Image 1 (cartoon, rainbow, N blue to C red):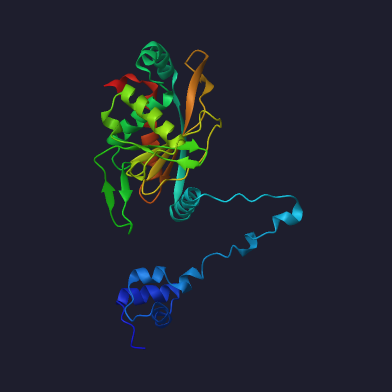
Image 2 (image 1 turned 90 degrees about the horizontal axis):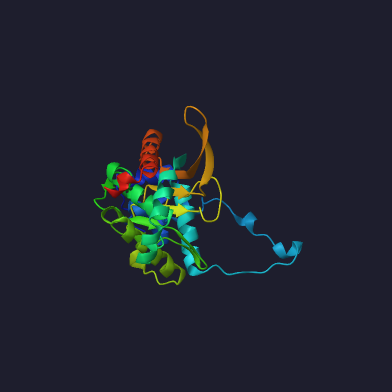
Length: 292
């Protein structure tokens, strides 16, 4: 076989990874080797952690049944595994006073019924997140595949994680920063209903700025959601709880919603995450700012 043709940087990386270029060229059936070929090398694949010990005869310990994973679930599992393995993620925890939102929402109940819109707290949370993303453009960005540049987005699209019988789906609510409360409430209901009925198209599940995953209807006090790449952060929300708050004279019962912001530490640092979450809490505490 002729001498392998490869750039000096490729040769250096191959040496670092312990890849023999002659063997790789023979396996690929050509003489020119590029950088991306190193990632496809069988020698690299051989270094993948051995999980053969996971192969267990579970039936040896009692009755079992086998349920095949759907294609959708398999793709989702692969994406989550890659995200968790490749992104250095940190979760910042906080909680927001939602007493004003709840009072305001109850006051809007007659109008909501007249409009035929189920106005949930999630609509306010989407509005607050959209405002915060405009104020903190670094959170409304994506890191390029080579990690050398940041793509700043001049749009705000919010992913809404929906728990369905066929797996977790994340349809995207477009231009959330340009929509009013009623439109957002209607859009959330529409996306959730169509996701449950498997009527969400592939074009409706991409291009998000950040995703909201809300477990408030189920329970829990906190969790660490996995960032949904190419987004840089994800907002987790759990059930609102009554918390004793000192008003300077006595403790008052205040409804607080826990917020869990997981973020890509390659781009966002802890101080930025704390400032972003603090601003989000302030917006949720006073919904009048959201109506402007």
